[in-house]
Length: 123
Image (tube, rainbow, N blue to C red; front, side, top):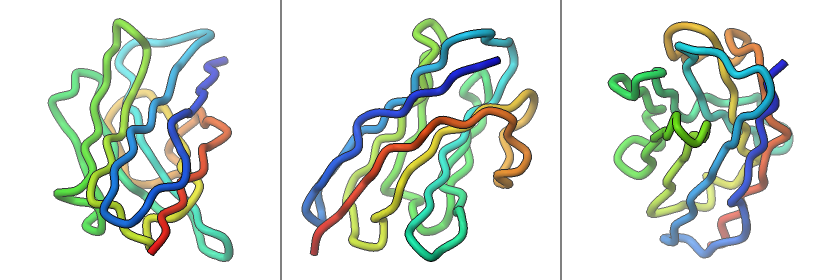
């Protein structure tokens, strides 16, 4: 069992920045990809970004491309999401997830999930 705990969310004005962190603990495995997803009230869960175990491959949703950066530090068992130029439409609860193998854009492909951290962007 792998536990994922997100942190770094909060309230920020449009145009501001936040850096989300996701710390993994428990039965950590090798060669796992990490992803970030978000879900706003009344909406389905949405893919945000994903990164391979090595960090060589990263994918982003079109809506965040150029504004968000996903990174990871395997020595710290942590994945990050740097969020710049935040917009009100970025408001959502952000979840990190982990899976064995390649980074994917589909949430059901991820076996492990954190509890989420709320990001609210005011206009």
